[in-house]
Amino acid sequence: MTLKRTARIAGLWYLGFTLGPFYLLYVPSQTVVRNDAAATAARVLGHETLFRWGMLAETLGAFIFVGLGLALYRLFVGVDRHRARQLVALVLVSSSLGLLTVLFNAAALLVFRGGEPFAAFDDPMRTAVGMLLIRMHGQANGINQMFWGLWLLPFGSLVVSSGFLPRWLGYWLLLDGVAWVALSVAWFLAPDYQDHLFLYLQPVFLAELAAMLWLLIMGAREGRPLAAAEARGPV
Image 1 (tube, helix red, strand yellow):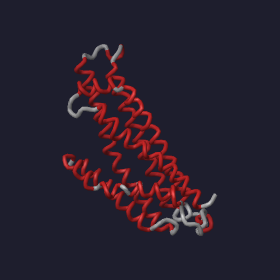
Image 2 (cartoon, rainbow, N blue to C red):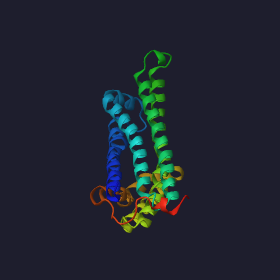
Image 3 (tube, rainbow, N blue to C red):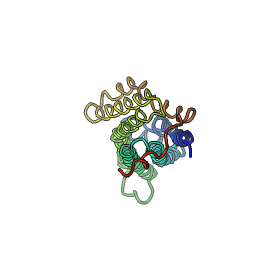
Image 4 (cartoon, rainbow, N blue to C red):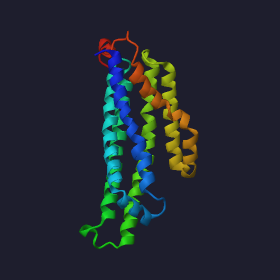
């Protein structure tokens, strides 16, 4: 397999990340009312199909992330096996946490729907428990922001060192990773300022879109062996 084809396969996996705005932004905007459990329960049940599509997309997003991590490992293993393994490890941690967040939404839907298992709960208690689970979904994503940034650090470093992708793209990805880590730190220590920080950092977050488009359209410059790491011997 050529280096360019390997890069484009990674770009195809990256394209799956376009699901993210759907389940991270659109679905919550249609189903969650901040600080209003009763209204949230009504909207979730009123848009149950959309809510379920959001859970499905979020589950697929976790598996796509793993596929992307493995594709990038294949692309960069000849650059630095150690950093490529770091990338995959951080992707696996983030994907696992992402799957956990889906469980919170699934449990919230179960509670909102009620039925015999929740016969002992009155409506205010059910909506309160469901809202707590929705909030836990958001809190888990807040924690996961740290890993959304950390995996970009070995990724950006590998791009800079690769020689077959532009160095400016690697530096942009490194900056993107630092921005996500900073956003996560703000979530832990100063949550009231997180939304403002997110808006200010939007240009930095476009690095992943640029990386996806570059891998899909340009691929990688040929001339460097794809399995150069094997030629160096075991690490």
